[in-house]
Amino acid sequence: MTANRIKRQSICVPITAKERISIISEVKKIKDSGADMAEWRIDFFEGAEDEVCPLIAELKTILGSLPLISTLRTIYEGGEEDGRRFDYFSLINKIIEQDASDYVDIEIMRTGSASDEPASNNSESLSGKSPEKDEPNDILELIGAAREKKIKLIGSYHDFEKMPDKAFVKDILKRAADMGADVSKIACMALDPSDADVMLEATGEFHEENPDHPVITMAMGEDGAVTRLYGGLYGSCVSFAVIGRSSAPGQRSISEMKALFDKIYSQPEHIILIGFMGTGKSTVAKVLSKKYNIPKVDIDIMIENKCGKKISDIFSQDGEDVFRKIETDIIDDLGNMDRSVVSCGGGTVLKDINVRKLRALGTIVLLSATEQTVFERVKSSDARPLLNGHMEVGYIKKLMDGRLPAYENAADITVTTDDRSVREIAAEIWERV
Image 1 (tube, rainbow, N blue to C red):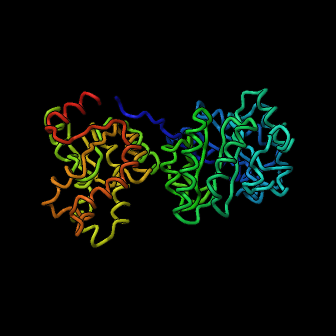
Image 2 (image 1 turned 120 degrees about the vertical axis):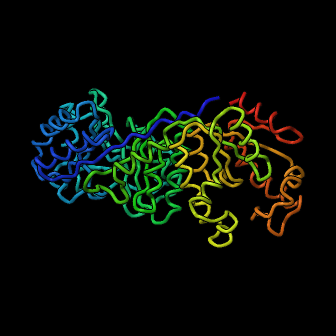
Image 3 (image 1 turned 180 degrees about the vertical axis):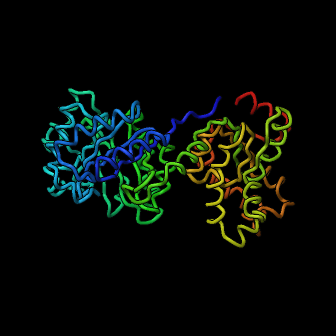
């Protein structure tokens, strides 16, 4: 087996200047920034409608091979007040008819001009609807016109007030796809960190069900920042970063995003050992490292070095939640390393985002053992905080049974360690990886 190939997320930088000269200046900076594409937010533009298409042509000339998204965002989906000056459907249709842009963003819930109220935005109204019969005719006409040109359409939906439930997110993505959009996009405001989890989970599920349909998803605001940084691990194909002025809350700088992407999409092809405590991860890692001449890395030791204290002290002094946050963050550093054998803590893969990060960085190997074997291996240890006061086979079995589904879901391969020599285990792992 080889490392799980996850496509690197593209980075798009918005153009938000108001005047032509400033817009041209921004585009030149984007061209030199290492961005993968640019988005012109026309609602920021102070010029006249008949200047839009000629300016798009200028921007495309400067960008060269970098694709350009042309977007007129209405105020109901986070656009600038000046955008009201433009007739939404007339301008979007003109951009399409003149074959001006690479991509055009259309708000799939629009029913008329930029000053109209948005269409219904509750999940019940989306269920079971036929796009041929129920979608606004104006939107379908735009889609039909785009199909006759080379322009691709991004069917988008934005909510700057709240995060809807997971079903609604998936319904929006499917609605855009069923209407004929080439890319489905949804961005909603995260009011707390759990909202980011909703967006990521919905993205992952939709992508698994529709692997060939591109999606762009994000939770806006600081509580949603994780979706901008790691959405690609769940199937979102584009993330938005900034050089200058932000066009949406929570956007990160392109330099920060590029540095992170260089880590998590580096594909070092690590051999990543997971499993319950006492299954032999650290011991097997040592033998693999020595026998096959590759570096050995222990995530728990990385955490101890970063924090300057033992894992048991982090648990007792700061709590498990703090430890798990540090653990999630430190996984990114594996992307800076040459191919290594990586030993994970027993609870590392209990968080889905950890699994997706690790899966992008290598092959995940589950080491398994019976509860009796684990007890014999750890019964003399005082460095197992989860077993403090519970060093018994029955409690170990209870913990193992609770974690087994997560371990099996994360694993690319499983290797049993009961009654086997470490060298034998290491040899099997090397052969299978």
